[in-house]
Image (cartoon, rainbow, N blue to C red; front, top):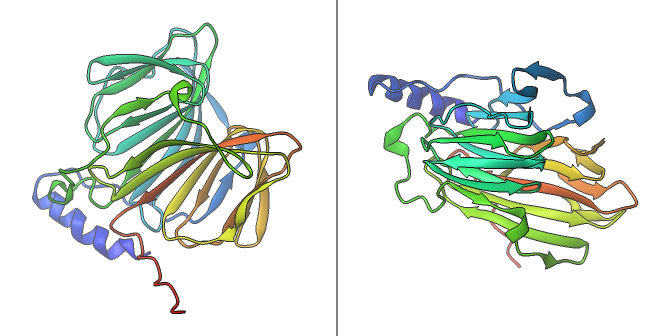
Length: 275
């Protein structure tokens, strides 16, 4: 709730500058969105599952949906918007359009669209393609005076086939992206593979908010002492400073994408205790 007074002030500034005001949405805390409970709604190009469209303790808007495109279908014509967007491919092969350039990438790949860059995707495979879509808006998104002109992350494609695999004690890790954006102080993404029955880490807290997308296997998410299992396609959201942990709930390897973000509203980490 700390973001609300700041948002009110910023939205009034945006209106004075002739900018489009950011929508006001109810605040959402930590939640698990299980794939099997998401409603699939037919679209002209395939189907869509809506996941969330809320504010969070540090975001003005966290919007997530899952799109399935029929072979040959495109998401839409190339378009632009002020919020930053991530697409993660669950299955299939997509042609990515970014500012007039195209690239083909498949399952496990991540696409990042910076604010106001032209983009779209098209299914160029022989079967349906399904992908998560995440739109992120901070208090700065609709207030150009607060934009970061020195952002380090530009729109791009992070192809699964080209990501470096780093063995860990519990499986594998692939770093995807990390840096600042026009409207986010920090955006970081990686992909974790966990061996069967293994915990990613003990329950812990951090000021950064975190989004987890389950790509393969079954992951048990524990949030403030309550546990829920999510299979492929499921989305976990861990709000700032909520106690959370994850464990592979199955006997075989599981894989998931992790997205961590920091905005101007993210609390500062508590100072380390003196020894």
